[in-house]
Length: 433
Ligand SMILES: Cc1cc2nc3c(=O)[nH]c(=O)nc-3n(C[C@H](O)[C@H](O)[C@H](O)COP(=O)(O)OP(=O)(O)OC[C@H]3O[C@@H](n4cnc5c(N)ncnc54)[C@H](O)[C@@H]3O)c2cc1C
Image (cartoon, rainbow, N blue to C red; front, side, top):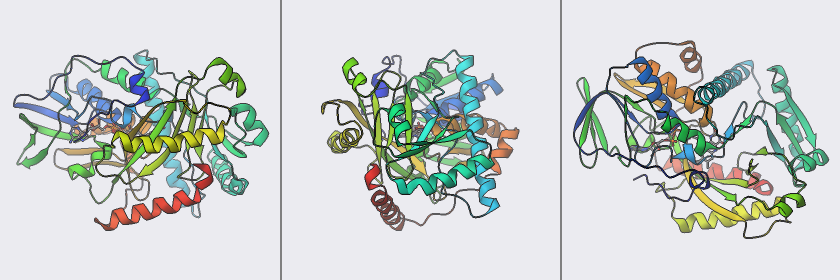
């Protein structure tokens, strides 16, 4: 069902993994964690710390870390753009969201410090940028909210941006100091490499079916079954396909492309900018990044796509679109510059809220982070492990005080509605793609 396509530039940039084990015989355990991305890996690390003598199994349908966690754009966010609020309640909810982002950043920071991880960590902040001067209103509004919440930020004009980014495409931007850029593949690989010894990791092992029978949960795989006392679902974009919180989240497939490192003369031609990251002001605009090793990354699609795994031919079509996006911003660069293009699946809710829940006795779930899963996924993984151990924390109280995801209509109405909305947002962001 879920298969790694070997196309992702981040994953191809780190050493191949060996010593892969799959589920091959019937087993019993105390905890089964499904999904080995940031969420599942963090949950496993925390569970092993709490329960030194319990049997904990972590499984993934593909190779660990090669879902969205190894193929995202690498923005560890402190804030996301909101249009402005009409009530204090909405502002409180936004504050709550940014408090969660901050905890997420702290958790990732703690991890990389403890394990001495090199993941190209760069505290370069991020720009919400637009080529449309009309978007000034949105950014001014956003600036007021950030000021109320004491976020360090600046507004930049076209000339300043051209110096900082090496492109004169953008007319204005709001810069927030607190965002971090990193190499997502290196980060998730470090989480796999540092898995404690008492965690059994099985890969290329798809959970096909599961059902609860009194106090145990029976999980079916192709060649064997695992019986567990507790289960934690950390499958994010695949929650819905496993029947988890189906009316509260839906998957979106994103595609991205990355260039080869710019040559010295190419880099000079764009003014040798420092590493930077741009997020769009309009939701369907392009995310564009200049990496530490001078590659340009573009992510500019979000689609309802079934089946989840995109064929190479489909990805190629999107890659052309991503090249056009680069050309618009950097007309001086050659046309054969894209080195890799890939797709990945994220989970969304209607109101942008995440899922963090005990859904039944001994059944837990954490996910649905949209574009903030690096920090929030790492945090939620740890915290869902605490919750599944019948313990509590101040972080859980904060997470649970957030607005919950709102109800979504069943298929086919959901897909029709989401497609229409995406189309509308795409039209509004036409110049920004
Ligand atoms: C192109 C792209 C750009 C993004 N950019 C950013 C960004 O800049 N910043 C940010 O914070 N977030 C970003 N995201 C989102 C972020 O990557 C995710 O929110 C995050 O990786 C979620 O982590 P996770 O561990 O919950 O899920 P995943 O990493 O998706 O892990 C879930 C795992 O579950 C496994 N699985 C699914 N079904 C089954 C099954 N039946 N049996 C066993 N295993 C199963 C999958 O194989 C997968 O490995 C982006 C995502 C994409 C695709």
